[in-house]
Length: 165
Image (cartoon, rainbow, N blue to C red; front, side, top):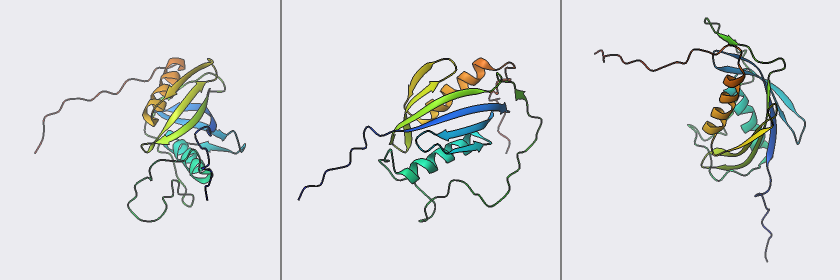
């Protein structure tokens, strides 16, 4: 007996990400899963990624080609919902964005090699770029934020120090 394999090649998960503020390279805003209409606020880019990954895992698409490694055999919980998280205030430089922030449509088409592939559309400028990894996605969004920031943050550079034993 033959079973038809479910075609997951053309299935994508689409998210609208609205970055409303940037403080010390930490993005804050709202992420919305388009297909379900569910939205969540995020306080950092990492939290936004975990929210999206949790949604992709719940839906089961795009289907990953590898299983993420873990320190335990338990299913990884990306976000701890129990404790109250306070954001540190350590002389952060706030970057002003245009009123309403910046908006992006992130379409995750594949989850291969333990990362995402797809397209990101900068809705404010009507530009679309493909990305091959989360690192490329981060760089594209960060470039858009920096190009539209009214205050350009000082770039952080590695400094050379002698090795102290």
